[in-house]
Amino acid sequence: MATGLVTHPDYLKHDPGPGHPESAERLKAIEAQLHKSGIMDQLTSIDVAQSTEADLEPWIDAVHAAGYREALHRMVPDRGINYLDADTGVSPGSWPAALAAVGGALSAVDEVMSGRVDNAFCAVRPPGHHAESGRAMGFCLFNNVAVAARYLRRHHRLGKVAIVDWDVHHGNGTQEIFYEDPTVFYVSTHQYPHYPGTGAETETGRGAGKGFTLNCPMPAGRDDDDYERIFTGTIIPALKRFGPDFILVSAGFDAHRDDPLAGMKVTEAGFGELTRLVRQLADEVCRGRFVSCLEGGYNLPALARSVEAHLVALLS
Image (cartoon, rainbow, N blue to C red; front, side, top):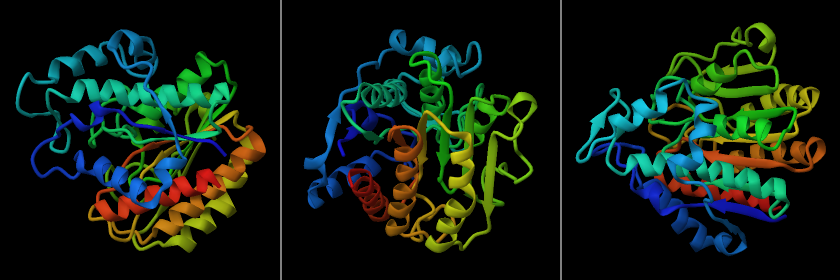
């Protein structure tokens, strides 16, 4: 398997504020671990081909509400930190980072669609799955995976896209964006009740999108075996029935047992197994088309080891 890796120096420029868990140290820890393990040498580097506002405007605006992009740009300060909410700060480097994060996701799907790589992982920041169509929140500015899904539908003209979100927090933004869309199947496992408070089993879509949202909320303390049972018993069969043409993963690693922002007990081996299950499904139903984007994960050693396990499973 040829596995791509998206990185970009602008990702390190985003500063959400002093002591913030979503820091540039996350990407530095991941890169150090991949070099240490030798995995980095096995990956195909993917350049971010689209990283300016002019490049990305039509794709961001296809997901986010009219005026949202311009309003967010105005909120980025010339110096210091501006807090959009209690959790979400932006600095002068946040704007180029946010654009490059979206651009990285689009470059990854382009490379998979071209056949240059079989699958890819995007080591992006800021993350995206909490960003709603008209609101930044939960460390997220643009919804990277949602933009990639709509790009696949409109630019690559794919019929159906699946988004699998195993971040420990429910991806309220991704759900909201596609809640009435039967062409994008959103699946989430998450600690519940927990931030942001959405993701009940009863939230299954609306109108034409009814039945195309699948939430698998779990109480704190669930481990590798619990996650594997939900994936093999519920999620994989549902995805097979949907039959996507491409699978995107919101790859948060904050369900790890060592993560400070939640209470799950998944290990890096568990994340490797989830990756294997979803990648195997992609091989069966959509010619292996699989791109993952980094979301959460805030214990640096645990995050780095989990990303390594994720990539090993993609390379296998």
